Length: 266
Image 1: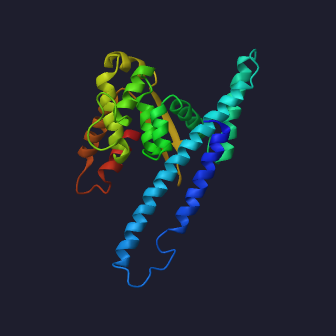
Image 2 (image 1 turned 30 degrees about the horizontal axis):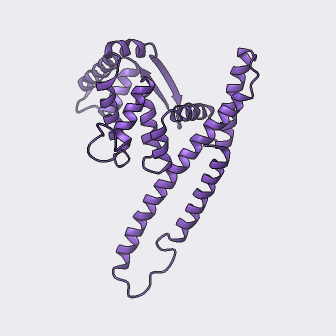
Image 3 (image 1 turned 135 degrees about the vertical axis):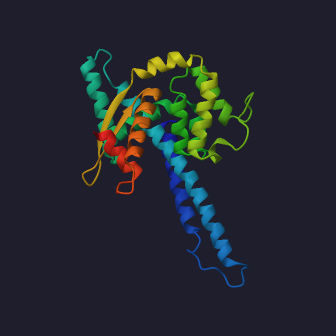
């Protein structure tokens, strides 16, 4: 998508939103004598939600094009013989600029730029998002599930779910009509069955990314999360749950979740 095309897409979205606002149910009084006016308004609200969801997806696609375009254009302005430190500083500046424009954190901005870059390599997904056939959550799931696939594998996964003319298209509801979590589950199942690398090889590689993260929250609270091999994580969960259940009793005021958290914090 070129800059000119992006501007045209933005204008089209603005026009669609303006037109939608004019036909929102209740904005114009219902005429007397119309059958079941409340039912008509109810259906109208649902139609409005459906159209708003489509416009939201199209806007998300435009954000992807704009973010990827800004990053690519900025990189193109870098001197070919620039030092590594200069390239790193430029990447940080790109993240900071996008964060400022969108009023989000630099961490969120960095994630968006990464996802935008990945989506530009997934043409069927980006086209479906732009057409409002899938949501941003569906697109993110596709990015995640194609992350460790080669180009051919990613294209095959895309085609299975988004190309009705594929050799073996997905059966049942179209991807965009599935709850994003259900779509992610189906995409992950397909990925597991068709991944060129064995689960053992992928597990060994993924285990190198194990980490512990801390995220402050409001009211003096915080989230502590660990990315671990599944057997280790399940073991920690089972031990904490077993210990928590043993502490339950008529004199215990805490619920199971509270006790489990206290046990894990020891």
